[in-house]
Image (cartoon, rainbow, N blue to C red):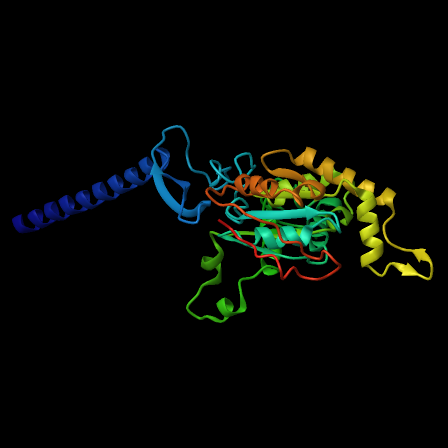
Length: 343
């Protein structure tokens, strides 16, 4: 019987040791969480001169903040989008992708801007997309403007014809961003390469596009348009371009596009061009800096320094243009004579 008692004692000691070890592990996990072992993502300069193309992940200790699945962490708070409101959730982290959007009026040098800024390292821009932003915004508006409002329901609805779990705030931003990403994919040779993961290939790039139809997306006003951009593309730089000399712009419309039927001009009137310029200025005022920047073709077309100020605003260092190409100068022709240099 003595050996039985010894074995029971040994088993008790082993069991106690295992339980103690498990409790210590659980305490360590809780300690690391409560002490705030969060990833502090900082962006450093690389050889290209752009702030934000390399990522270093440092673990910071803090006793003030506990990590939560719903948070406002901004990985680019010190660089690209310091004032962005990031509504992060397990479904979507809308500030993880940087965007550069050129919102312009027609016949005001938007294709030139596209060609210029697409030359910058660590960036990929695409051209017109038939105002796809208009239809992307309707995905959100359809849920917001109908009853019940599925995006503002504060808790899971487990029964009824509109039963659904809570849709996290900010999650529609990832749908909008993915749509624009699909319209601006990497080159086909990259897509065909089985050794390349496209998501990894693009994860550190600034993606963007240019559009001359943003004002014509059915917004109630520039305030609504700016709110959409802030909510769905929070970590963005928005370059707003116009031409102050609307007489010149109006003449360019009449010469370039087939807007006449007989003797009647069917293109935008000078009044309409002025309204669009007013929208552009109001959009700038509502977005504000550092998210948005307003430029005027009447000025930058003759002064490359203005475009280089945009380069700095985007976060590039030791990187500038020494000249300006002039796309579509005589209609739809490409400027094959001017050599674009980026130093």
